[in-house]
Image (cartoon, rainbow, N blue to C red; front, top):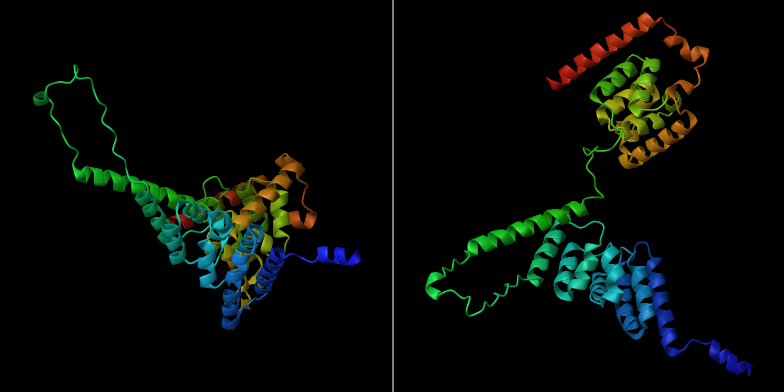
Length: 358
């Protein structure tokens, strides 16, 4: 009896092939930099094992290989040519598919494969143009049937003047529709790659605020700098001071990059307020390297998180805590002097802006 149970535990023939296929795929995935010999061996093993395995094992193997960047070209073409129920995840996300291979699969395998290719995150203009042309080739315009009128209502043939549409007009209209569709697909494909100049709906530093921040940083007027930064963030002065207290300069760099400040001005502000960032680090100084490694989108998200927490802490600007005596010393002047300093700063900012525009 025990021998019979042991026999049941052993996988069947089909199941054994599924296990061998998944083991082969798993072993290939573990190779970070496969050699030419390993790539050739995998290509020779994969095709017969894939064909002998069940549909579920095939889908699992394709899903696993869709995240691998080292799949041999012959194996990639073989997988991409499989039925769409198996090849869909590979076509939609595999990083090993070149533009030429994607175009060939879309032209030879049918509309379902082309739709799976469209779901890829980063499509080159070459592939987009090929998909647009392919769509029009597979959906030719159908002539509209001419309705048959009653014989009694049909006018004499001599009185009907047929005005045929010129072929040039039809071709022009087709090209216009193609161009509209091409631009639509390009705009959809570029949604994830927003240009840095597109600041619509984002918190952005104004030219006046940027000039004031550069001036106050150069003169080491940290109190006026914190006031201008809090205005640019539309947040409390306390948040601006907390950002400046980070002596590494990283929080201020994140803030200025997230506000859309010019990189040259950002580096100048950082080196003026944090002299240690002017030290050389490779071929550039530390401030340039710090700004270069920041992602603008992540900086914008970080700023919004800070502002949200600041709004919960200080619903009103007047509720922010007062500075300690030693920090408030530069600001402990008369109202007349503060107004004079503010006017002088505004006038200096206007001069800087005129020089830049000139």
